[in-house]
Length: 258
Ligand code: 8X3
Image (cartoon, rainbow, N blue to C red; front, side, top):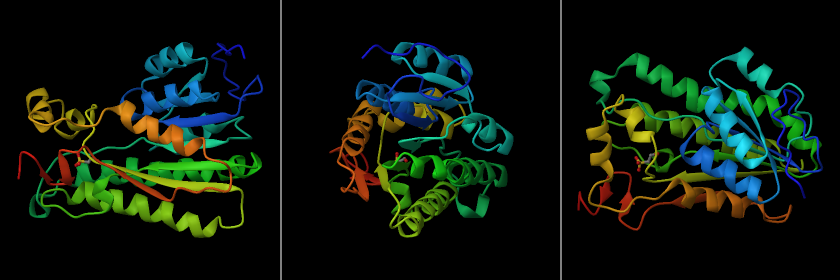
């Protein structure tokens, strides 16, 4: 199969490959997932705010790069335009900002976390449910976190957003019962990506310190699992997968914290 290298605006797969949409695809888990799914035969439509970056990856893997801000209704509408049949949606865009106790909650950080993780995933899912059903074998993958399973001190902005994103996704598992759409939640623990850099507002020293002294997961480790999920037959639904480094036992307990 010769890959389609056009980066055209129609985004409907011009070849016979099924379409996979990946949000937050400019780096980290999103970029690695886009590469993995392309390797497995999908025409991947990559979305992120950094258009040059998604176009670069799209060119490398024979997909389509489009600008996407999941917090913006118009941006989502433009992104999904022409995507009438979609086999896989990976809701990966999101992240954390800050590590403050509730008593000092920064409302702007909270708003950003709820807008990206919760409402961003909701916007994308709402927009693409008809296209996923139309594929006859759709799959929605929500990248949540161990923070969707636990509470931890100083993390409520993020844990509450991840819990809300996860519950919305788990609700859809009921609401789409009987429709040809599978739903999988991936709950990663520590993955060395730009995650901590964003959380600590670009403070590299603080971000690096998070992963020092242990072996975190890589974005590729997570992408490998998503590739496995996507390659199961239509009747097999992997509901929830929790994925942590061996060195991490829970959100706040790892070989450094004891
Ligand atoms: C982030 C998970 O374990 O790094 O989603 O806090 S952890």
